[in-house]
Image (cartoon, rainbow, N blue to C red; front, side, top):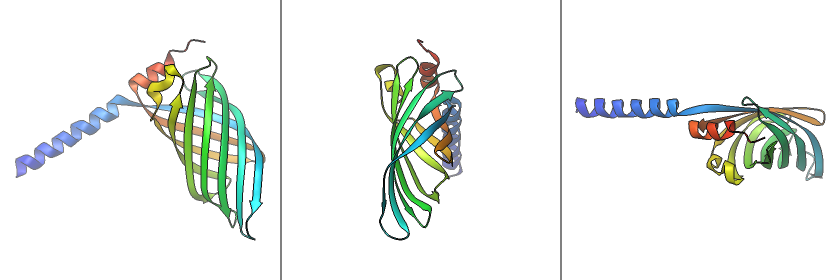
Amino acid sequence: MLTYGMNLFTSMLFYLLFNLAYTEDYVQEFQANVNILKEYSISKNKKFRSYELLGTFTDELGNFGKLDVIITSDVENNKLIKLEATGKNTYSNEEYLYFRAYRKESDFDVGVAIAEITGASDKFKPLIGMKCVQSVKYFKDTIFGIQKCKAKKSQINILKNKSN
């Protein structure tokens, strides 16, 4: 029984070490202007809001481009209950990524969202499924954020091979 437990522990340890060694962080910073498209005051304390973010991004690999996002949110007592976003990053070499992001129960003007790459141009298709954590904060009509994704080395190499 001890041998089985040791084998299982050793297997799990190698699996974790291999996966950690096989992934890297891909970090992207972004900023955008916030344009409220529609807002409904559902009750005294509840609001629905849809808005658009138009901005730019840079990453640690020297890539840069434009950001275009549509967001819907539910707010109650000035607290965010739910936020869903769908966006597109267009890189300077005309490659692009689509992503979906979700955030729940936080302050409206600052928070952490979970994002996933859901679509891409041909060159970036291997990035689909990459998961990210986004941290954002608002100042008046502007959003500032940073996104950190877990990427395989092969995915990082795709992002490094710029054709611009």
